[in-house]
Length: 515
Image 1 (cartoon, one colour):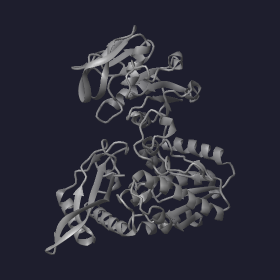
Image 2 (spheres, rainbow, N blue to C red; image 1 turned 135 degrees about the horizontal axis):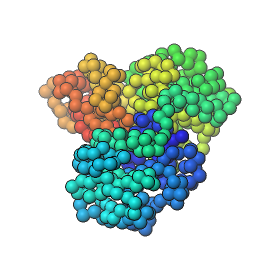
Image 3 (cartoon, rainbow, N blue to C red; image 1 turned 45 degrees about the vertical axis):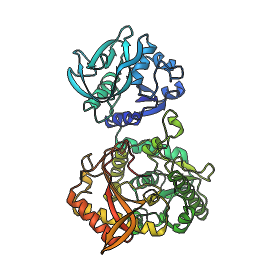
Image 4 (cartoon, helix red, strand yellow; image 1 turned 90 degrees about the vertical axis):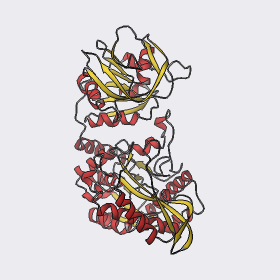
């Protein structure tokens, strides 16, 4: 029993899924043109149509597959999804006289099953609007610039919202989704960490059978939880491999080995591949090339290790849903690739393994909840995210041991200052505390003065963000005293750096990582 979400290419589609999951209701995301039998195979109790960049009246625009209306299931269209329903059912959609992008205020009418009466702050993002409603529909809300901001046909249980209830900028959005998903669709709120674990264990056993499995672990929360899930499902069939690729943070290898040995014991194998990775990255500056090379090199290292372990058929990866979304995996054909994650689009076409990815459709907060339910140590579950390509995507430009040494030292100083200020505490991870913080080495030299002598050295950018789901993020308003102390220490203690800047860009328009 679930909710199916049809993706028409909106940048917010994945957030719809996350909000429905917050309601503890299971949902799955499908491309809008997925075969109807695939969508209906999950026995959905309702369908949500996402927004999208197209206009419904364009000849090449994505359309409404016939099975959607034929299913007689409750429907909710969001932005493009609402306009699509209107056009299909006989209404009219046209170019708006006044486009709306950003915060807006709507007024909801009485007798409304989706919106409580009164005014609501919402997030609009549209250039088209509904001019004429189909038969049987009523307008449920309006803004000063959009006379039909929400619609409904209670008899057929079809609703539409011109705004985006899934984003945090619509404070009452989760309640609107709850009214549709739980009250109207009747979907059960039984998507809990324990149910996720049970479902994952069942699928892992079905996929792997009695075959041996190799897990790629990095010490990060994603790979650790993935390995723990597979260990729970398969026990001794699992062997875990930790690869030191030379792109780790300061002291990280020792910390990771200690944490994982305590959990996996003799089943953990450590591979020193530092020179292999650095050689492969020699003279590579393009971030997409870096990710591709690192992805393939990881696979080749695991293949070599697998030969020593009896050639296991399966490889476990800690791929999570944001990795899939940003890499524009095949199932999101309408969406644009942001960057290739080494464990998604960066994988080689041919490899000796079949992948097991038990976290592929989980958000970061769900992964942490599963990790806690599995009994993983707090230092693993609440460890800050670290990109799979490691410091290669924080060392902008060429990746050399000399530049990595600078970056490690600066990053360590920044983290020390944040820890001393009590700003990396796990209990602050609620959208207000720091979700991720790190240093970036820039391939930019600038003039400075140190000891009355001219310097011409590289710059460090500091990055700290607040976030709940890592799909959106805001820059952290750190105390000026902390930034001053970190900058002063970096230019004095890190050879070859004479300038420090602080990144004050949100996501979007930027990504959290620089590459």
